[in-house]
Length: 168
Image (cartoon, rainbow, N blue to C red; front, top):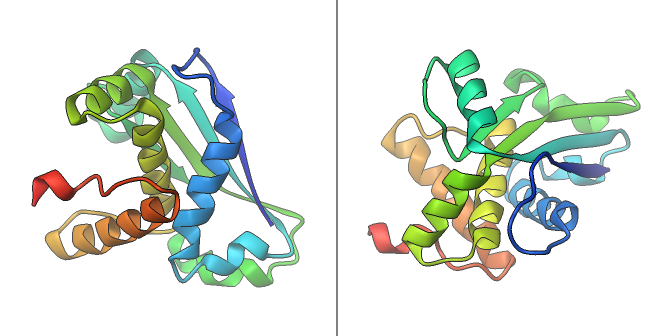
């Protein structure tokens, strides 16, 4: 069973049930991957989403990725990619899939630049972060295109427009 827990370290814009939204985003992303069965697996499969500010994400980005600047989203997988397929059959009671951390100011700025709501942009970033937790990346054009295609389908299932449409 998939459980997505959120923690709002700093107030985020828009009165919203972020836990419900994050759960919908993570479930939509997982449903389109070979790991869809994790959503209904016997063990509790948990994703943690932290909604924080640029300062915290900047520190995490510097400390864990060697990039001395804030970014919109960071993902911290807790399961090795080669073990993901066996998780649905695990007899462990609880599996932490990983953590996703979003930076409020960067998300708000990017949403404004794109002319979309912070909620829609943050939802996209949670979908994106979830895909990183299950081994997807965008290190080359082929993997980026595959990841973006899943993001577009997951967001469409949530009623959110293609975030890459203006880039084509």
